[in-house]
Each structure stands twice: as C-alpha cells, then as structure tokens.
Length: 445
Image 1: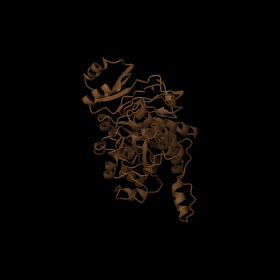
Image 2: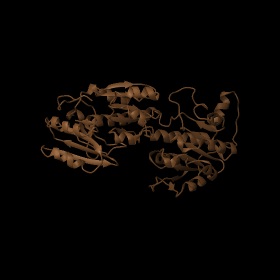
Image 3: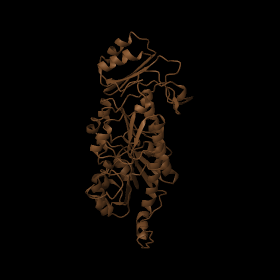
C-alpha cells in the first residue's frame, strides 16, 4: 500500500457514522475528516460471485478500484488475481484457504457477503492481520420463509405432483398428504434463522420445539428440549440451522434417522456437512422418512450449469432419483431483499474498516468501534496496529508514545491477536517506528 505525504487528506462519504453504542449518528460522515495514508483510487477491490449492486456501489462511491466478476474463480486463477488486491468480497463458493491467503501480500480485509465464514481460513487471516466481516442477520428472513415453503410442499408432495403434471400425468391423490397445523416442528439451532422460523411456524398452527447447545429464551410458546434425541423423537418435521463445526459434522446420520418418527421429514438449509447424505438416501428408501428438502451439499459447483452429478458427489444420482425430495441450489438467502441488505451491511463494514480502522462486526478480530477524526483536528492522525497478543507489546508501544501528545489510545485482544488504536500523533516518526518493529501493521490513518 503506497503512502501519501499528507495525513490530512479528506474524502466524501454518504454514510452515517455510529456512536460508541453502535447506534447511527445523525451527522454524516462527510462532516468528518478521514485520515488515510493512501489515495482512495489506490485501493484495489476484487468482488466475486455476483455480489449485489448495493455493495458494489458503496465501494465504488469511495473512489476505490472495484473489479467485479459474476462467478467464483478456480484456485490458481484466484491466487493470481488476489496478489494485488487490498480487499476481496466473496459469497459462499470461493474458498480462501491458507494457500490462497499466503499469496495475498496486500490484502487487509475480507468481506463475506453471506452469513457463513467457513469458506475462509479465519484463523490464518487473523494471524496475518486480515480482518473478516460477514452478514449474520440480513438473509435470516429469506431462509426462514424458504423452510416454511418446503414444510408445506413436503407435507402435500407438491414437488412430485408438479413433476408428474409437467410430464403430462394427472395424479390426484390425498394419501400421505397432510396439513401442517397441529404438527410439531423441531428446530436444531435456535439462532437468528431458527428463532424467526419458530415464530412463523407457530403462526401457522405448528407446535415448536428446539435444541441448542446453550440455554436460550424461547419465543412464543416454543420449548427447548435437553437433547437432540428428544427433539428427533418428538418432531414431525426436523430442520437444521447450525454452523459448520467439527461438532456438527454428520450430526444427522444413521443413528439419528433411527431416532426420528417413522414418516417424518428432514430439512437442511444450513451447511452441507451436517447431514450424512448416504444415510439420508437409505432412510428415504426404507420409508423411515416421508420426505426431505436440501438446499446445501458437501460439495457444490463453482457456477451454474449441469454439474450436480456423481462427478461432484458420488451419491448425487441416487439422491435425485428419490420421491418427495426437494433439491435446491443453495438459494436460502437468494432473494432481492436479502442480497440488497447484505450488500449494504458488508459494504459499509468494509468502508469503515478501510477508512477508519473500525472492526465492529469482524469475526476474527477484537471489535473496536472508532470515532471519526474531525476537521477540527488538522494535525491528528490514527494508527491501527495489529500484533501478536504477547507480553511486552504495550510497553514497547508506550515507549514511543511517551514523547507525543496522545488524544486517545485503545487496546483490545481476541485470542492470539491484539490491536492498538492511537489518535493524536505526528505521522512520520510513529509509522517509521511501527514499520521497523512489525510486519503486521495493516492500516495507518
């Protein structure tokens, strides 16, 4: 990142700032002075996987160089393209592994325009001073609505009836078709999506039980059950809303299918590794399950096309041959509303981080919400210093700060990573000090 000679350069912004409580201020950021050691046009951003226009427009409005692609990239091409960029924005298909990030010498921040961050090696990123942001809330409603639709579609065998009529076959039946009123929905994972789904299901007359690793306040008349087995034994419909963790790998397998009610239904719109798919196929063929809906898979194509075959997953054709199974291509959050909101949420987070050093919402860094420096502080600068969280760092930092008038100093840590933010210092001497003591300086403003 090239440094400018002036620490007092300003830039316009249309976004509102946030106060110390994270609330939006009525003062526009354009009234503040953002100090940056770079010209905005020098910041290179690569956006992959058709990131929504709202996010692209927010970043382009700052004057950054924004390179936009509608698809993900093969790993070798990704490595070639990521070497020169300061910011990368992705969705769920792009895999930012340690091998890829090792080549990203200029990268300072990653924006995941989705809920999950399992496609990013967040630990490697943190250890190399790369912040990671995501959008944990914006598509929750879209996913919850999809699950409600799938519950009704499975209960009425709508997928099979539609496919038959498309082929010219009139097959009007009621056997094995049910109302969802009075049925029990079991939710595994009562987070942002699970809790919204709980409210929607109750409004349609369902009884809701849920299982979560921690004790949570239930909404409405929902009840938390103590074990996963209790939930599986009591639910007519089971839906998964958990992150990808070692603890959730194949958490629904042969043993769990045996614990489910005969004739029950399974829905997974969380992560593809949560369900043992061959075990699901056997449970469907044996009649243990009456139907299933999957929106996520252990391996997913990198783009649209005729790729959902045995070459991708060895069981794909067996899965496609089943009756009353809804297969969708990871579209839980794929609505105009959700993608627009995600673009705004992640786009604004990236701008705040690049321009101010604010880490509020980062998944792998200490969360620090920094105020904007104002036009009344023409000689002030800000240094953001990311370092190993080891004894002695503060002492070394304060040795150099002792000769300067410090307006504000904040420190925080998260695991092995620590951050220092310092306002009110002369630019040249301090940056020379930090650059001589660490390679983890990611931004100085």
